[in-house]
Length: 274
Image (cartoon, rainbow, N blue to C red; front, side, top):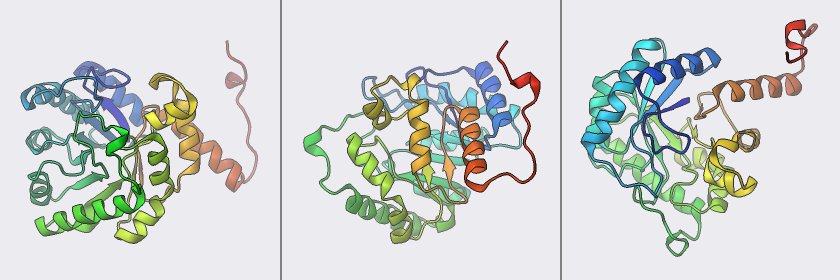
């Protein structure tokens, strides 16, 4: 899943429709099969924009990406059902809700459309930073309880279990060490909740920054470290900013782990930088 942020407040900047079309095309060529478009950043040092502002920001990007990459799944990154509905009408076919269903209408919308939905583990109020005194004591036990409640809510609304994708929610209402604990415990979430697919949204996150002490734009190597440690299974989704870099990482990882049949040569044009 390549990140195509429309919000200028996003950690690594936003794009307009023209730039979104170009970026999406590059990401698909590099290996992305899902493109995630969001109109509002969750960073807590910026105000929450209105529904109208979010729609004005994200809809042109979704329309441009859908037109440029017709064979690709387009996801809308939002916690508002009103925004998700308009985005689905504009061409999106998946909802990535980073709030853990803070909007009670989201479950009904997804059930009605029969689409995939990402449900994040987050106790945070969107756009509000949680202080350490409000953090849960046992994030793994709380994650299981929280996500089980959300799954029950979705089931009651008529959402099929196979349409649900779990997001452990790194950075969302968690201290960096708690994000790491939940990522390490995600295999337990699969087993305890009976959900097969996971969205791994580790790219350039604050927990990576806390480890390497770098700004978001300098966290790609740290992101690769996180990706090397998590247990990715078939059907999972990796939400990343650097699609080409992550694709290269996994190609080399697979070659070294599994070996190469036959010969492997380096073309002369790639031997030296000009």
